Image 1 (cartoon, rainbow, N blue to C red):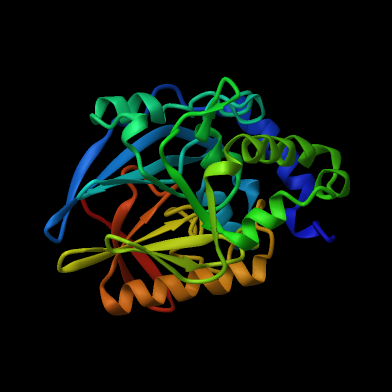
Image 2 (cartoon, rainbow, N blue to C red; image 1 turned 180 degrees about the vertical axis):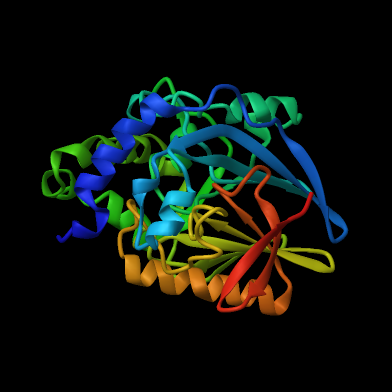
Length: 303
């Protein structure tokens, strides 16, 4: 299996350096956002600060303009409809692999409590992809946190991360991430529902294949009455980078060419159809419209 696209050296150096450059304090607590005739609850799992070297393919001036660090939000979202409560991604949890490097994440469960959402009332969790900052919060103390929830994700992502040969095939610096993902999987597997392609999960929630960031990365098109919003996961990592430079790479992308193609497709659709997007790492709460800007795009946050 070829993992060259994981940018091994940059990933290791960048993530190690970022541990010493974290911003102090939480970014923001939960907020309710009215969309159509429904409400989407934006939740914060905290924030991550990374070195700009993790973004690749930037012009020298654009890279310099990022400064010494780039702050990424860690957003998740929740939606109530009838007797179902959806959670879109589950945050980092307390896994040592990520909390050691990014101690300001792992805040989601406090934000859920503040928003009045109990873990046992969550019925559906939709996972964009299996990086640990999106699945770590599924477990605590070796047991599932959301015991009554079905965990939805793409079959391609599940199979990739749970390949028994994967830990031995990746470089040493990647093994903790793979091992963490496989440990979470072993704990929640009885609640996992995988989907091969586009999947209608009911209540206006449709899972969409958006590969590149990981082999089975997925977005969600959420129809809230008269409006739609696309929850894009990590298809767009930074509003400071990827709108103006959609071809720019990110160190943890599995396939940079496919990721860029997916990113541009989402940006074009959102701008053309005036669909709001919500991104895991866009500035909190990570919700806004996309506008075309010459040959690139611009993010217009909304609240």
